[in-house]
Amino acid sequence: MVYARGTDTTPPVDFVGQAFVNALSAQIPGRTISVYGVDYPATLNLGPSTAKGAAQAWVHIVNRAAECPATQLVLSGYSQGAAVIDLLTADKPLPWGTNTPMPAAVAGQVAAIAVFGNPSRRVGGGPITAISKTYGPRSIDLCITGDPFCSNGSDVTAHAKYGGVVDQAAKFVAARLR
Image 1 (tube, rainbow, N blue to C red):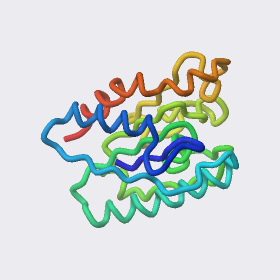
Image 2: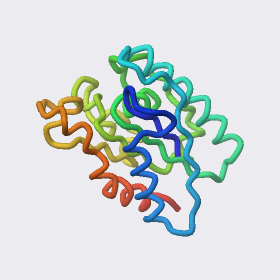
Image 3: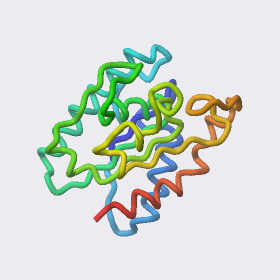
């Protein structure tokens, strides 16, 4: 799993990512999940920070796919981390940086994508399921009701409640792993 954490959270994997990894592990007993936390600033300076995250994730994903061609990749991110994943997968330009599309050869190894509190839903043209023809069908893009970062909601506290929906994402991802 390649995971991009949210803004100002502790690296390498924030509370949403760890809860998601735990939930996915429970869904696929006997299988191993290796988690790579994208090493990027994750600061409030969203444009440059998100672009750095996408570039760093791109290098890791492409190298991992080449080194381990039988490995299935899961991409995931929370908040700004979801925007990092969007820059790798979206078919259209996004407001927080230049898209860094992954090579077509890598697409076959990406089994699933799960993002939480994705700002693209609000200001980037829609959820990942709508902004990526290649990756949308194998993606789940969760936005909690009221979360102002991914909807027109006004409940700032909703943005910190994604630990409660990780089971839904884990079930979705587990169903897509061979």
